[in-house]
Length: 479
Image (cartoon, rainbow, N blue to C red; front, side, top):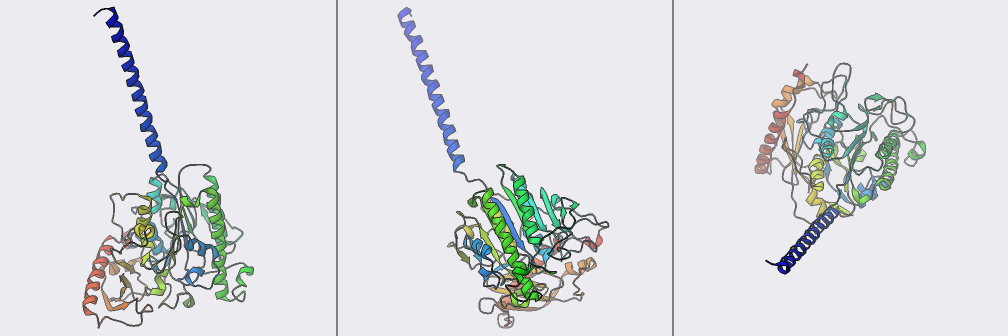
């Protein structure tokens, strides 16, 4: 080739090599930059906070036209969506809590009625997947503080504890705060009795929540904080200075209102802490009650109260807040309930459902993110409670169908697990149909004037009931 040409070929090869190297480096840098931009554009999954009251009625708090001053909850409602018609999972506490945590009807989850740990084997089944477990699998830190009432171990019965349902940390009571909301002595922290505490339950629960938040330090993982207050469940107690705003110090209605007011103040402390921990835009908050009020004057004039499947027993407040994502100041007319919490959180966070038992709740995320959408509920809401008359209720659109059992069982407040076989066999009578749009107080039975609608809804009710009962645990057979 000759020296001259050989030299220039070598120079050309080296130049080409350098150009290719530079192009490769540029390409790699561009890919890295693009990936970093994409990652920066992906919002971190938000913290999730659930606030649950105990026995609080649909017309207790300010933003639902109630008599109690609740500025913190009112602001929470203004910052997001307040559901005008929202439902508990059951007319009593344990079943409603099981429904909230699983997105499934409580009988599927093993809970037929309120749980007495010393008398019953019943508890939230470990086979159920809770919201805590879903979020923990997504890298969330998880904690439960407050009332539990889904089963805890006793000397006679071994039952799972909250850590076996997905909570890293727990501070809880079996059922109510004892001897009342004031100076309770029955809290358990991670399996260890705490002993007598000084203060009111709602404030003590928030103290524990803030302490747990402090313990997280500067971690990057999001958290799930499940805060279940005892108020205003009896036996009640509130500071005198708050109670006297609503009447005489020993007047039950005044004390009842005082417990709600005191809880709102505890919520305000928690909201301030959450703002210190993270930008409010990084926190999704949900608020509701486990069932309707036991006071007739706090049901908004609806029929019934706690313990029965009339509207007054199952209607509760329902608020979702996620600043920057859920539009503020929305009052939603669509009926929804705590049964929708699990699928809705998964929908809002973009968590795909995994293979497992089907949920009974529906995903409200489209409705929350785009209030003007044509969203429609894809399946009815359904309730069953052995002690209630009516024993079953189902809402589809504006219509509600209720029925009584066609068998005799005691309506004792204490559930007897030997009743389960008869409950699972079902059998209903005295069907009544109501149009809640024109008759929200359920005074006009339309079963005779709308026979075709009655037939269709009855078929749906019996189909849903059969599916639920097929999954129900036979606690009376277990040793």
